[in-house]
Length: 72
Image (cartoon, rainbow, N blue to C red; front, side, top):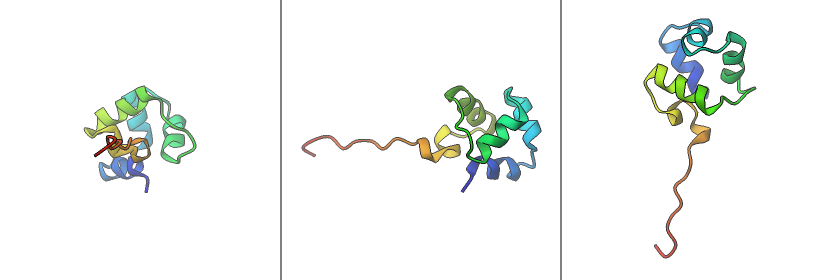
C-alpha cells in the first residue's frame, strides 16, 4: 500500500501541487510515491507536516520496533 499517494489523492491534490508546497521537484515526489527513491528525513518531515500526520503514518517501513528490555 502506498500511503503517501493515497493520502495525496484523498485530498484531491496533484503531485505537482504537493511537490511545490514542500519545495521538491515533481519527478522527485513521483519517484518517492512509486518507491523508486527513499525520501530524506527532511523531505519525510515536510511531507508529514504538510499532511498533518506522523512520518510513520506516511512511511510505515521506517517505523522502528521498540526493543523489549532484557529480563522482562
